[in-house]
Length: 116
Image 1 (cartoon, rainbow, N blue to C red):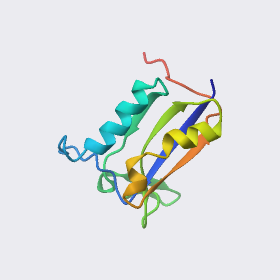
Image 2: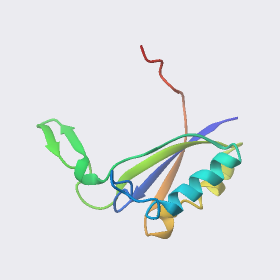
Image 3: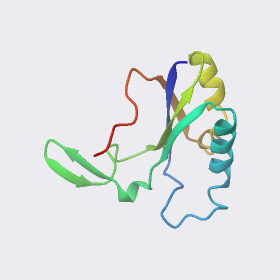
């Protein structure tokens, strides 16, 4: 089955190192529902933007790549029959309800890299 990356855009990530279960409740419920259907097999939440570092031509700098506006707050990989089904599955992502959004993109290749 084809894979689709869902990139989460939001004002910031809710996944601060000290985030409570209550603060992450909506995110966890969305995650659990996708896992229960067997459609999601990998997901990563990123920490808030103040922990980001960027490397550009001029060298390293504090902050996210896009200094203003939304940032990529996390991503997950879905198994779906086509882009339309992937969009239907991603449509319930909590970031959309809080003014952010998601980008769904077909995965070309890749996977877990073996670690030594």
